Amino acid sequence: MSSSNSCTSCKSKSLVRDDVTGNLVCDSCGLLQEFDSYEANYGGIAGPEGTFVRVGTSGTGSVLDYKEKKIYEAQKLIQDIMYRLELSGSKSKDVTAMVSAITEGEFGQGQWLTVLIGACAYVVMRKDNRSLPIAEVASVIGCDDHELGRMVLRVVDHLNLKQPDFPEFDIVGSFERALKESPSFVGVGKETAERMRKQGIFLMQCAVKWFLTTGRKPLPVVAAVLVLVAKLNHVDVRIENVAKQVHAVVHTSKLRYKELLEELVKVAQALPWGKDVTRKNIVKNAPFVIQYMEKKSMSKPGEKRKDLVNGGFDLEGVVSECLSKEIEYGTDGSYVEDDSRYFEVEDFSRFALHGVDDVEKLKLSPECLSMIYKKFSNEIENAKSGGEIEEFHGRKKWGFEDLAYEWWNGKSELSKKLLLKQILDNEVGLDALPPSFENGCRAYERRREKINAAKLRINRIMNPSNPNPCDDYSFSTSENIQARKKRKRGQTEGIDWEDLIIEKLLLHKVKEEEIEKGYYNTLLDLYVFNSGIV
Image (cartoon, rainbow, N blue to C red; front, side):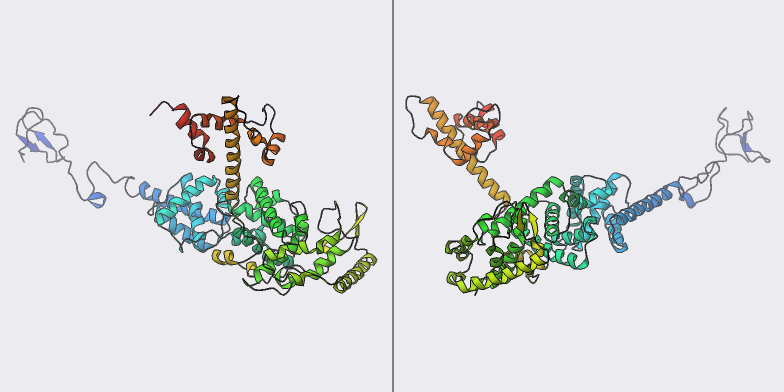
């Protein structure tokens, strides 16, 4: 059998097929023709097998096994993170579905997948209106808070989540969860824990009303409220331990605790002895202050109060506390002053500023005072006989834990979780401004004082023959006097680096309104270092 193909050696077309092997052989030169038996096959991996090519491992083996293994490892990682976050199986399914939707079913491997799973867990809990702080998730998955926060923003933007599908962070729920799970409160009884929970919700929502949480991380405020309610209920805790347990920064938690006490001191100014209340003794006075706040929140706006029992606090209990010379009220044991001044009309006049109109009803008759004094004296005698009065630096002291009357009511609406509008509508005896705004106003005033002082110094140097009687203005205010007392070593006449920069900017004709804002580096770049560039 001949073929139309030519020989690869002699180019002869006389090719014949061998009857035994079936290969083509050149009839002229006898050369065996190579690759004659190869047949090209089509149809993919399911088609017929070729002569030299066999089905290997590149099709049905390693590629599909790798993808399945990748998905399996990702799902296993999700379950592990959900277990460490102590979330239920349903939440694990929601997180798996969210990760699959974001990655289009590919999942993935590496640290970025771990961060993505943590972000999805946070978003799922927020959608369910349950508290799961970013700091807690970051500590579990082992990443930075800011890295996790950026991933959360990307997930929210990718899924296009908006309110009400993505509600605000539940700070009250975070407090309840911390109180329930924190090791510092494991040994607290159920009744005390429930009391602390209501008091904490009340104080937490007061902190929201006072803007202590606005624009700030919520966990330090949670730690501060936990420590305060613990002290009010005689539970021994340390703010360092509580802050670490709720994944808050210790230093920031201490600052929030200080701010919370300062706001309570401001509320206490409405009480007759309010000018004696400071941040050092506010914890001792807190029961009366919180009772006053609770009564305030329960009263209707514009309602005239018949007496202080309905409008502020238990007058009989307070008067009983203040009448005895032997009892040290609400301080740290440092001094006891004349208690009669608490009943002067000028002290009670403060209540007129806070909604108590019937000032005449605040005047106690001698018969009423005598009756209260006798009643309280009998209580002291009973306490002496029972050994309930302890010595404190050689004087008698009566602790708040020994008081007979109950200061916490727990019937205020603020003891329950409310919406933001409802919180702002409630009256608690103080309408505070955001601390950042107050600090900004004080900074503006301080810079204004420095600008005026710098102008006077410049004028005194440029016009030495024309003395100005107001040249001592820069050191006339109490603030500057305190600044002179606290000036650091190396400073001259209370002038620091900020004063020198302000002088430099004034000499370069910078507007005072711009200097007041305090962006010194930007102003120096614009007006001093680049002053010759138009």
